[in-house]
Length: 195
Image (tube, rainbow, N blue to C red; front, side, top):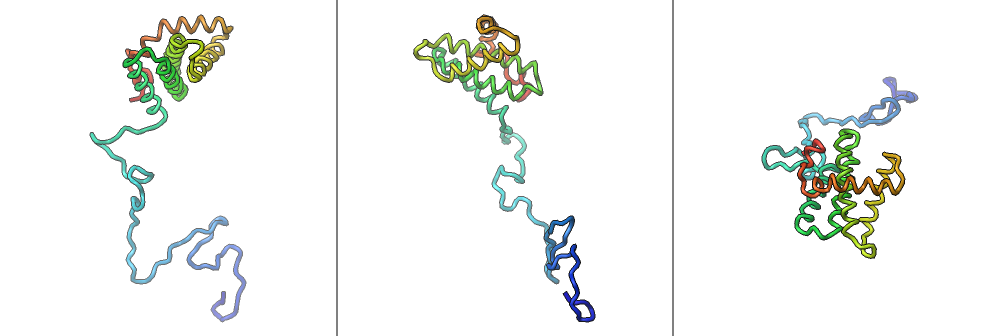
């Protein structure tokens, strides 16, 4: 770069050769160059965004959809499994699906509402045990086995039980919580504190 006298001078280390950029803390950031006579206008924050995408306006009012997330997904999964059980109570896989949805919802809510999460896990235990009871040893599904195994391990760990004692505890929980889990006699929003 030349100085006023026309002599070439050395660039300082903190200046960029590009006059349209500034250097701050070693990071070059672009400074928009404006042309004389061109009007400046505010950028449209929603230009190029998909409806419902990041930066798009949120729908409000009666037609607005509820926000989706893990808790909403697991709650909806539990409701669908409850409906499937009401339609055909003889299918063990529906009980396993209910147990899985309740267990995942309890896991998601554990830090916010420990008491509600314990209640959900107890309902999941009851549903998993019912799935096991309705299955024959030759035709028990992998999902049912997995839910019973996970929930039995949770009971053993939490209460410091032997495998036999955890089976007895599962029977007790089954008799106390199965109707709540299947019938939805205690609505999930009351347990979880979520809509």
